[in-house]
Image (cartoon, rainbow, N blue to C red; front, side, top):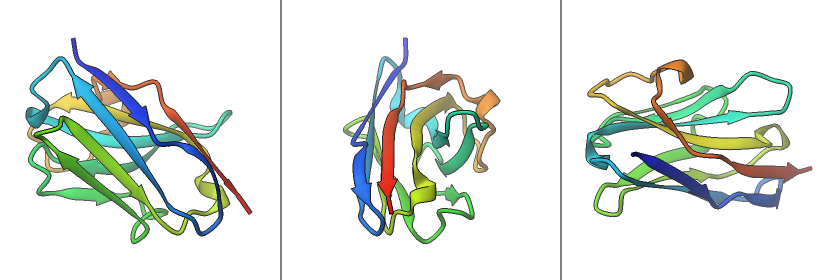
Length: 125
């Protein structure tokens, strides 16, 4: 069974950086597309970043483009989300999600098969 575990969240100030990690197990990680989503309580979950199974194609939400970078280390079964120039509106629980797919386009949250439990990022002003 595929499992995803996020880490790296915390409380930071506006302008700071954080790197989230998502460690996967139980599957052939290199065959999965990975996305990061985030959710604020009371709001819908929103897409943040996407990586194809080889990492050659990435995509970002407009709200984070130029500030966030998704990367993956297939040898370590880990995907990262480097978040720079954080803003208070980035405050949310961040989730990584996976799907066995060769898609080169981001998938919706309902299309993803496996989810982590999330890590909280709080950005103070």
